[in-house]
Length: 149
Image (tube, rainbow, N blue to C red):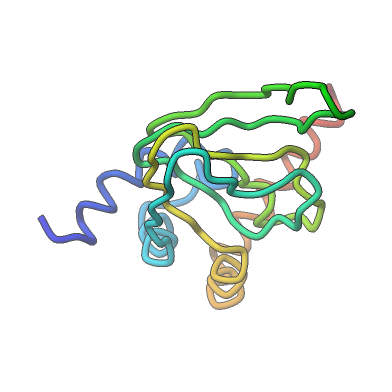
């Protein structure tokens, strides 16, 4: 199996779980996968801090990532939001929103993480009208769902 086919086999099921991408056709999933880069991070590496600009979607191939809110005051402990592992994803709203990160993320073990940069995603959407249309309709339906809650 080539590297690209291996990446597709790993990433396709993850992309299908991401609300932003779940309704896309397989050829669009493959187009997204071609833009994704695999990064290696040591344990205890800060991926981003609360308040940072959102610049990428993260998909965990292996390892563990903790999502947390930093301590409010000196002496306080961070507040854990989630512990994520293999095949989990986070940061997807950064691709379509300019809102800052609402939590911090760090690795808790050596991790291999696929990244899709906001810039690569925007270039892909700008060059693919069908993808832009599908992402738009997904975003509109998600906003409507959130309003009902």
